[in-house]
View (tube, rainbow, N blue to C red):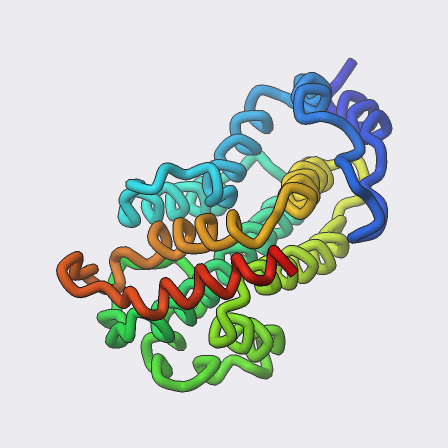
Length: 258
C-alpha cells in the first residue's frame, strides 16, 4: 500500500468532530487516535509531533525557556520552507496554519503582559516571538489592540475579557475562533497531511473545551503567558503585580461557582 492510499484509509477511519459545541466528548480516545496515526509515513509522523510540540503550549513545563521555544518554532518553520520534497501547496498550507496559530498566541500574550505587568514595549528586533506581527506590536505597544483591529477583529473582544478578568471566556472565544478558521484549512482535499494535522489539532481543542473550568483556565493562561513572553520583560519577584493576579483568580473562581 502506498502512502497516498494509507492517508485515504487513515482519514476515512477517523470519525467527524462535528460542529463546535455539539459534542460532550471527543469522537475517539487519544489512544485510538495514536493507533490510527501509525499509518503516517515516518517523516510525516515526525513533522506532526514537531507541530504539536510547538503549538500545544499547555503541555510545556512552566520553566520552559522562551528562547528555546522560539528557537524550536523557528527551526520548524525553516525546515518546512526548505523542504524540497513536499508539494509546494502542502508546504504553504502548513506554514499558514502554524504561523496563524503562533500569531494568535503572541497577540493575546502581549495584551496580557501589557495590561497586567505594565511592561515597556519589547526591544525592537528582539527574539521574543516568531510572529509575523512582531514589529507591529513593538511599534504600537501602547495602542489598545496594536492597531490590528481591522486585520484581527477578535482582538477587541479578547482585550475586554482580559480587562474584566475573564480567562475562561477568553479561552472559549479563542478555541472557537481557531476551530472556525482551521475548518477552512483543507486546501488539498481530505487525504493529505494538512487534513491530518487539522484533525489532530481540532481533537486537542475539543478535548480542552470539554475539560475546561474557570480555575484551571487561570493556571493554564498564566503558564502560557509566562512561556511566550519571558523574553519581553524581566520579572521582578520582589515586586509582582499581586493585586491584579489576586483579583483575576477570585473573579474566575466566583464565575465557576455561579
